[in-house]
Image (tube, rainbow, N blue to C red):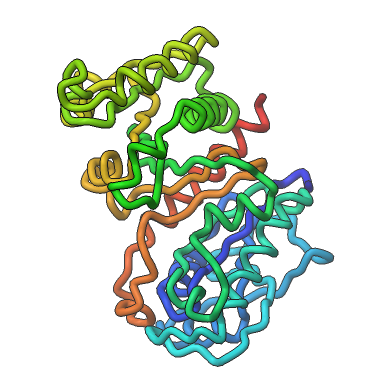
Length: 332
């Protein structure tokens, strides 16, 4: 990697707001060189649609910059589209293009060209409609990097929420919370809080699965049979783990004020609280990868593509988080 960290930016679904976000961001200079891995013609057309005067500067792996692009400019590693793009209209023919941008960014991180990658939202449905099995950025990058277990964490301000299970039907959650999964996820969360966020002794609050954390077994035995014994084992390894606590009272200032992260058992246990606190200013971080990857906390917003009425706040937070994670990793 060069002395100056470089970062890859993928615009995601070409018909969504990802290209708009990249162009709006380019109005101001970034502290590090940022490479948009995207179709140059798409960006030029969208810039014209948004009435933005953005200079697109061609780069590739053989010609990478060592300085941030000036304000009003964007470095672009041109990536071919399969079909023309109209803002707001999905086209399954461009599904492979989306995955190619992710592959270029991810492989560039693996090979040391980029210090990290930041992703704008993709549309899972249109990729699957194209006949390509795709469940999301997280799983795609886990496979690309050969990582057996990754952890989804969202953060806003001083609140971080990681998940033991992610996109599962609620009826399948309890069976998925095994001692093995809970150990793996907690160890990854603890290690990345130390290595990528620079927290020497992370303090993690752990949610129970059931209402009132099972209420002594009267509302479910998962806390007694699985969660508590597993946490005791991990505490013996030196981790500071508090819980399992009832999720309805854990997310209060009394508990959160000395907390570095919350570990929730399932998607809609932890993320509604976080998104209520900071939607539009939150970041999605994939933990457990050998590379740094952050993302926005929102979707493709097809109805807003090309109209300029969007907020770049979440993308800016994702960038700042990637920069900070790189700095923490460098200091270790």
